[in-house]
Length: 241
Image 1: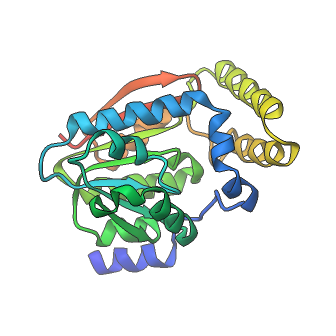
Image 2: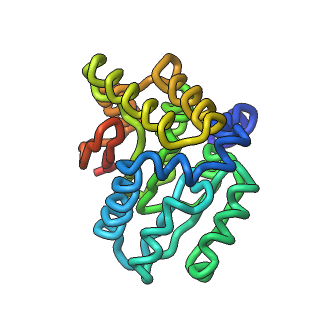
């Protein structure tokens, strides 16, 4: 059965939706225009550190250029992290960005589903602005793979764009952020990120808070808890026990 599942995953890898060259070149400018995401990134690092115990394996899923792991590595010298991303270019950039912490890191350029199926189990998996990029059916596949990779006492921390259930509130948050992009970014970059995030608001990508909780529960997680919401972004903690 596991061989059949591996074959299925290999045949249907997760699409890399954040592959627009403009978005990749200007990632840090875009992040600077979303201060709440920076706040959640720091708080995610502290949550990982609070849950970590000596010997735990930690995975940064969809690590990109290393921004998600940076605050964790800077403040917690005892923690080692595996970083996986489908983009070999992003992994090379992460290696350069995180060079001072190289002895504590393992880098893998690979599709997330294939990696999760093959890799040794982790006690903690975290993802920062990753899961929202996939259509909802692929979100379910990914969450199930995360669940299967975790140890029996493992946890998944998701810091991401997760829409509130109230549709009017969600639209107002989206409109306010698009205006910030227009004010703070060049026209080319603003156009690219606005197109990307407008797609987030539509099916098959749109996911509300209650829908995402249901996805996690459907994957097998016993406990799902909202840790913090800052505007359209949130941290959700899912535990196997």
